Amino acid sequence: MPHKKPAPNPNEEGGPAQGRRDFLKQSSLLAAIAAMPPLLVKAADAQLDEKAAAYFEKLPLSVEVNGVTHRLSIEPRTTLLDLLREQLALTGTKKGCDHGQCGACTVHVDGQRVLSCLSLAVMQEGKKVTTIEGLANGENLHPMQEAFIKHDGFQCGYCTPGQIMSGIACIREGHAGSDDEIREYMSGNICRCGAYPNIVKAIADVKKGGQRI
Image (cartoon, rainbow, N blue to C red; front, side, top):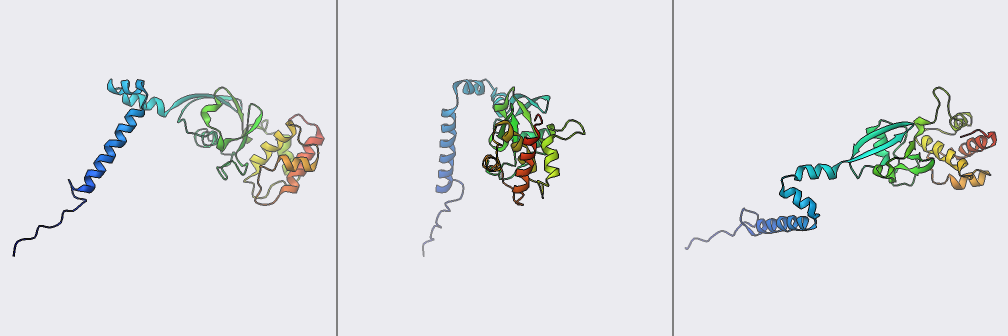
């Protein structure tokens, strides 16, 4: 009987599957090169591609955090939350949902409350950021911190930094005229332990006290 030639393996070198993979790789590479800015292509031609990549991977940032100016080099995708926690070791600001829905990551930027998990760090160039660590004056707590202790406005404490930062902003914004108004303008901060009544009392107490916050 004549010898029957074995069927080709599509995955072996030179087979149809290998050919398709090579084609896709080459197509992707050509598409990427076509999408590159002319200056970057020129840099690559001049054997400066590594320097160009480093330039686009890291950007300079000068930002003031709790009264201290930091000059950093960061990736463009870095969020303000990750910058604070991972590069500046300010872990008081918490990462909760990481989708801007729980308020645990609230900080102040130029006096306004901001969800740091949704804010890119590079957008804070030249701005002043205040975190929970920057509220106290040495051993003297901020009035809102004292009020949360006085009214037991926390249980597990995980959401507390964001609650305090939002509570301060709530008063500054003029939205602490009544318990209902406080609840409405604090609705973006979620407390899993259900300490809402005490949180409202703490904010109302600071508002009535008239302290400068």
